[in-house]
Amino acid sequence: MQKFLIVFELSRFIGNFVEIRILCVDSSPFLISYSGLNSIVVIMKKRLNLHYSMTSVFFISLLSVLLFMPTVADGQSITQNSIQCGYHFLRKGSPDSSPSKYLNMRLDYVDGVSMFYDGFTYERDSLRILAFGEDGKIKDQEEYNKLRSLPRQRVDDFTIVNFKTSEIIQLFRQATITIRGTTKMSVPDWKLSEESSIINGFSCKKATANYLGRNWIVWYTEDIPLPIGPWMLWGTPGLIVSAQDSEGLFSFQLIWADKLDNYNRVTFIDSLYPDKPFQKGANTKHFVLSMKEAEKMYTRLRTDVSYLFEVTGVRSNNVEGLQKKAKKYIPLIPSDYWKDK
Image (cartoon, rainbow, N blue to C red):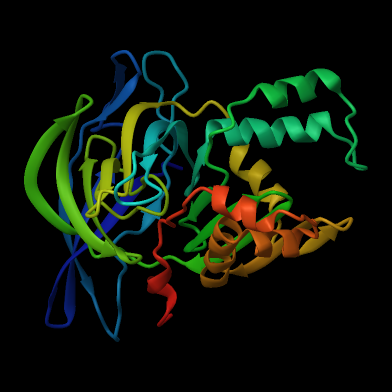
């Protein structure tokens, strides 16, 4: 049975009807080709209009996604229901500081689920399983040496956007503490513009939205008609190529897009941060919270050394000194956003 990727975009209400713009991708009238240094995906598109009868009060979210079967291009088994993208992520610890640069960020998308993460962090979590035994002792010195050689500066959290369950899951790690925060997806109110630009070889259009407490300016490409992007940014008519908040604290830049090389990353990471809390020994603890409480707890763990020691059970006679050396941290979702939530 032939399957399709269909993206429904709410256009306008007309009496008892809602007009929906449909982006329909099919293996016959549409072409997937690969070219350039980073095998950039180029997809021809076609737009259709449809009127959907409303017999009761009915609201359609901005985007609904159905998956379609793989399309083979240039003799390769490459699918558009799976893709991997590389991003550069810059974040500031304060408005006047120089940004920290994370140049190995990844966005995996497969079967209606996307995950944004630091490639080094994923490798670290994989090596930990190989390097340590259940008792916490080193069981493989070679894997432990690989673990120690990884760069220290990295993003320690994962963001999963699940279009099938309409959930966003944030997975945090700080010291021996892991946190799983979950919330229902809320549709960003993107204001689409006809302003266009070429960014890293992608033909892009501009969109803006106030989303999760910040004003975001993004550029998306309809050449890759998937409503995905870095972090929790989603819902544009194509892949988000560039994003920056209005204060200049955070920015994401797409560097490459290619076929997905590993279909099991989301499942593997999800298994490390299960949906039930647990504790191993005195110090290793896993919390399962709402997104609001997860964000609040993680921010406090990052900014309050005494609280970090309290939760982990670590003792120190130099809490004040360590607090002075602690790096400044600004969360992507500002703390004020949660006050009325």
